[in-house]
Amino acid sequence: MTVKPILHLGDPRLRLKGEPVDSFGPYLHELLDDLAHTMRDAPGVGLAAPQIGEALQACVIEVESRLYELVNPVIVRTSGEENDLEGCLSVPGYVAYVNRKEKVWLEAQDREGRRTKAHGSGLLARAMQHEIDHLNGILYIDYLESFEDLIPVDRMEEELAEAGEELPAVG
Image (cartoon, helix red, strand yellow):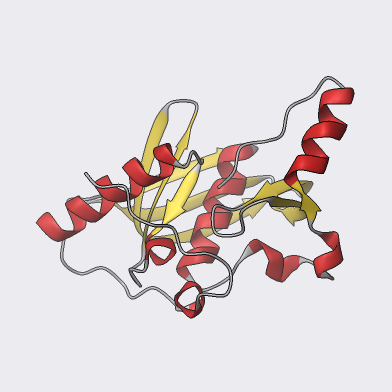
C-alpha cells in the first residue's frame, strides 16, 4: 500500500470520466488498497481513483469504521433531500453547503468482480454521491452558484468551535 498524491482543483485529470473496470486482478486490488491508505492518511471519508490520477470507476468510502470498496458503482434509487457542509480532499481548505439526496441505494462490484448492493443515509449517502460524482468528472463545487459560496475551513472551524460543534468529515 502506498500513499499517493491527491490531485487538486485545476488539474484537468479531475474532470475525466472514469472508465469502467473490467479486470479484477492484482492491479485493481493494489489501486483499492492505495485509495484506502491515501484516504486514511489525508484523512478523509472517501477517495475516488480519478483523484489520484487513475481514470477508472473505482472508489473507497469509510464511515463508522466500515470500508466500502465500490467498483463501477451506479446509484439506482434515492430519497429525501438534505443541505449540509461538504468538503473535498481535491479542494483543500474549503467547505460549502451542498444539496444532496438524504438516502441512496447503489449497485456496484467488489474487488473480485462480484455484484454487490449498498445503501446509506446521512454522511454515508453524501459520501457515496460525492465519490460517484468524482468518477464522472464532477466536483462538489459544480453544484455551487458561485465560488463565493466556498467557506474557508479555518473560518468555519472558528465559528463551529464558538458554537461547540465540529467540522464534518471530508470526502
